[in-house]
Structures are given as C-alpha cells and as structure tokens.
Length: 625
Image 1: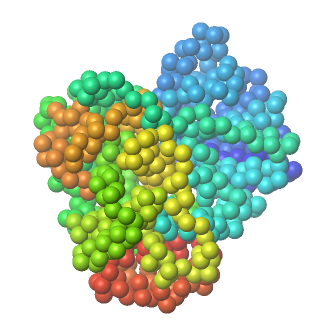
Image 2: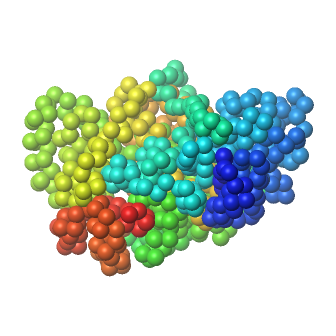
C-alpha cells in the first residue's frame, strides 16, 4: 500500500518538485518503506511505498521502456498475474513482478479503457508525456482515496488532504454547504470536501486533464446496478455466494509479508476469518480483537466465541490476539483526526486506529469485513424502512401529530438502547416520504439546527438533497442500501479504515468489496437478505457451518466507543475548551447560547447530545475558521 501525489502544469520545475517532495513526506506513514520523485516537463509525480508484493522491485514513480509514460499507483491489483500473462503473449516485456508495471503495459495496449480490466483497490495517476495528458483513476468502490484541485491550468493531487494542503495555492476557503452536510452525516458526502474547489475523484471513474488547455474530462466506468436480478433459487444463490466470497478472500491472500484478520463479535468478520483460516490450513492465521471496559461497546466475548468455533473446526489453525483499551486521551483523538484533513466524526475511527496499531505489531496486511452490511442488509434501518409501507395509509398530517406524541413518551436513554432506537424510528415516521431515510441518519435535525446554527450555516441547503439521486433499485429498502453503498460506504466507512490503518502503516483488504461479490449481491432479491426480522439472511446461511450459533443469532452492535460518558468524563474539559474557546463561536458557525444549552443538557443527563457535541468538537479541531 502506498500514497501518491503530484503537480501537473507549472512554471517553475524546481519549486514544484520541492512542494511535491513536501507533500510526499507528509504521507510517509502510508508508505514508510520507500519514497520516490520524478520530475519532467510540466509534471512532477511523487510516491511513498509500503512494500507488500515484490519487496525488492516495484520502485515508483515507474516509467515505461521508452520513457513516454510515468505512473504512480496506490493499491493492489488482484488479477495482475493474469493480466501480465496476457500482455506477455502480446510481446510486452516486464522488468519486475509487481502489479504496478502491469498498468503501464496495459495502458500501452488498451488506452484509457484499461482501467475496466483492473480487479482491485486502487488510485493512480498516469502522465502521458507525448500527449501531455494526465489520467487519474479510482477503484470501483472507492477503497483508495484521491483528492485534487485545479487552478487555472494546474492540477494538484494527493492521497490525503493533509498533503494537498501543503501546496501554496491550496484553496482553503471553507464550504458552508459541506459543513452543514457534515454536521448531519458526520462526513462530507459525494465528491466534495469541506474546502471550496477541492474535490475527491468519484469511485469507479477516470478523469483526464490537459494542462495546455486546462480541459478536464471525466467518465464513470462502473456503478452498482440493482435492476438485474438472478434467477437462482435461495439454496443455489447461497452456494454461489459462498464460492464468490471464498474466491475473493483467496485473491486477497497474495502477499510477501505477514498478514492476519480483524475479528469482532459479528457475522461479517467471522465469515472472513473462517474462510481465511480454512484456505491457509495448516498454517496459523492471526486474528486481532479489541474492546473497551463498557459492556455496551465490548465485543471481546463474542469475538472469543467466534475464534474458538473457527479454531475448533480447523484443528487450532486460528490464533486470536485481543487487547483491552481504557479511555482514549483527548490528545490521541486530536492527533488521529489530523489524518482526515477535514472534519470527520464517526467515532469508531478511534477503535479502528487502536486495532490497526495493535495488529501492526505482528502483521503488515489484514483482511476486514467492511461492506457486508451495505450489500446484505445488515443495518437495522433497512428493517425500519419496511415500516414505511405499514404506515403508508396514514396521512402526513396525522403522522406529524401522532409520532411526535409517541416519541415524547419514550425516555431519552441513549442511542444504543431500545428506547433510543424507538425514538429515532418515531422521528423517521413523522417525516415526509422523501426525507424519511435521511432522518434516520441525521445528527443535526431541525430542532438542534434552530438552536445551534450560526450565521454561516443559516442559509445552507437541505442536507437531505444528497439522498435524492437516481436509484437503480425499485424497492425502498434496496434504494437505501444502494444509497449507503454509493455514499455512506465511500464517504464514511472506507475513509475511516483507510486513514486509520494507513496511519499505522497497515494495509487492509476488503473481500466483500470484490466486484463479483458486489455485483452478485446487487442481483439478489431483497427477501434473500431481509427475511422477516433476520438481516444478512443469505450470508448467514451461506456460511452457517463457519459461524457459531451465538454469532448467527446475535444482535449487531457496531464498532463504537462510550462517547457520551467520555464527553462527561475524561474529555469534558478539553472538549469544552474546543467548543467554546475555539473558532466555532468566534467564526460564526455556532451560536454560543444554543451551544451552552445543549452542553448543559448533556452534562446533566437531561438529553443525550453525544453525536452533535462530538461532531462540533471534531469540527473545532479540524482547523477550519
């Protein structure tokens, strides 16, 4: 795994090379093994490397035989051996056995459409010197990041925003619309960032840039499609799913360095751990688990059940390592947030970072179960959307009276309690149809927005607009899954795993995001995934023998932290300093009187405001003014 950076179209080569070098150094944690820089006419490319395959070769930036094409690449191409063989049969000669060189030869053979043949997770920049053309590309699901901005006829790109910000022309003006969206969703959705003029390359897309004219062209080469449904019955579909996931894991075991698997208390990671252990027998597989002292957030007991079950069925081939973590310090929180380069408030990034550091003590690459919830209906909110049908006969005017009254009778006992989930359900059912799903996710609803929003947030657009795109799915619950795959997974889950694992110089691979798995999951009828109140039904059945009975029937917890109690305990004073003495109030993002009310309500246990207070704290720590 690696990082990339570059500047295309500049007047002073020496200055551009110096800036690119600084950007490269800022991303050293992503590639501690090696750094490289190439500077030519109108282009400078930089690269940091974490060596996983072909440890001795594969140096970047990489140039083809005649020096016409130059490439920096971040990621892994799982079908590179197959592509290499095809290219060799066509006369291409390779100098090393790494996957990066395959991209150069494939571009020579196929042109820009070569990206369609890549099976993997990746972000790349390819400079075609004769045509004076830059090509940027990103993998289908958006597992690897790529940020850029354009000024006049210059384009600057990097794997992380923190590196991009080192360029003297970085457009640092905040985007109030993006801030508003972030406060609702805990991340900035879509291709935008919190800075005006700074963009993310869209997953499954390629962009070309011509510095001579400043012209840019983008195209989507892949997207999920829920319209095409399989004709397989449930039993055959489950067998096919088992085969596809097994092959996806098998692909991701290619490595020249030690590797293992993340193991939590849920179905997803247990499936990956079981398949990985079975494929590697009789070699030992290392599984890594962590937890907190709070039983609501500690998955160690469930993970231990999974580890024992898998180990018992594989002759002891799985070895589990676990760690108990006390409350994280506020200083650690501050340091980790810097890796995102913009506000980010999914608090599960903290345990993800700690787990990654823990695993890195023994391994350099790990497999994860990310993506299964979005593909196989793992979130409880998909069941909630089915209730929309049951209440469809009620006029909106009736729902806006009845459900608020019902919510008022339910105690505010916290988000992870049954009462907390019922309160959110009531809030969802009272909303207009086109806002119901958004309302389940919204951490900055109208009541809080009216109390807290400062002048800079008052006239921003409705964040629900991000959910109004053209769906391929017809069923409402499937539309929500499609939304989560295209927005929540790419904007929240994958950046969290990428930034926190790479902060520890650990590569993480996601078998559930294999293209064949994703396309097959999209083709499955919804009833194969949601069966009554059972979520991820077909995944659980496909791997029934690999899952302990307690795991198959257990409740999903999610990977969280005791955020509410920490804001009243060890984080209370430093968080208050950020909220009240930092830029939030001073710069007009938040009203002091409303913030004081919300803070006191949370401290006194009157209302659970953990999410909006943490969102605001992360915003205050982001350096936005």
